[in-house]
Length: 219
Length: 248
Image 1 (cartoon, rainbow over the protein chains, first blue to last red):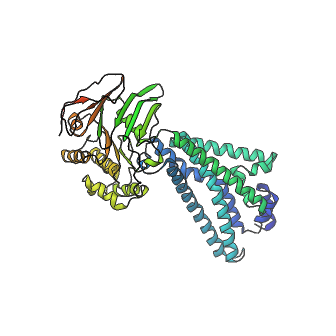
Image 2: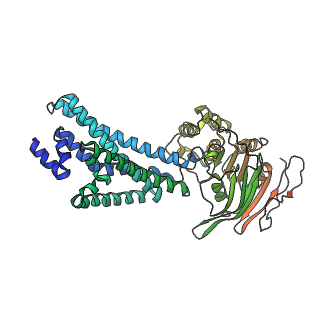
Image 3: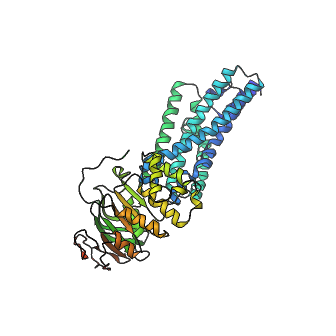
């Protein structure tokens, strides 16, 4: 893919700033970044829909909860899920970087690795938002099957909301979980600050809701 | 790391008119009890009378619909009670694919204890030989034994045991009996259908029924053998059992 083609494709997905930033990135990594961003909601859901709901439904939290607080247990499980997601995403990026370096071209090794690391960090920051959301879903529904169905429903709703808002009010769309990577990749410090606030807000809201429900429900 | 002892010097457990509803169904009706430090209280009664529900509420897993509960002066599940209450409840699930030893070490780690504490707890119940087995390979009695071992791990100040003798062999029942009789080192509340066991280890007994909880009846005292009814339980239904005195 030449630079012009890559820029045109990116313009369909992202704002001009993001497209401009990504044109400097090796095309294989851009492709992986786009794929990852689309699959992060489903990846985190598939890895973690049962992390909290399963133990609620089979009363598996009862023995650990005699030894630690409910909020600590919930936070520990959410962090473990995030850790699993990070491992998967890291493996994908490591593989992509190695293959780009092995094929040669697309810049120096350090250029490729720095892009790989940067995109990995963005994916990690986006994935933590979904981990917090799925933790809340698991704590609310309390059954793995329902958590999976509710999660899939929410993926569709959030994705649809992002698509609609992206056309009508793109700034607002950027604040949704599906639009966060656009803010992170903008390259402007002020927009990345907004991304940081939005990521922290989604995370805080998800984990607070999960902790609140988990603290009050029968286990 | 053991929790520091609390300056609180009241009873280990105090529950007043505790009621639990699951939807429209009343699972526990008007339970009032008090367990002094070092005492063992037995909950008896027919199936469905709320024994397991009462223990789940006291362990902090289930919230009472109404009533007042204090464990060492705090509400159940209060952070200061972490590590001070040990429980082996009938419906608490073990992770089926994990090894007994690994899971016990995980629980020990959560409590700030070493892996040695987990092994010692298993050894005390004669269950150390099962530590490399997975939970799905354990029989009902073996699960019960491991459940009691994890409850005792870290020397909790209050033990909650649901049907502790169910499925156990005579030798293990004797170990559990000794454990509960260790003269006031920990308070305990147990539910059981086993009248012999209950009267041999419990200082006091409450009989639950679907109409409500009976009075707290003293069945064993160190200086007197005769059973008598304590006046501490202010509940409406009369005592439904008068267990025979047994000092064991």
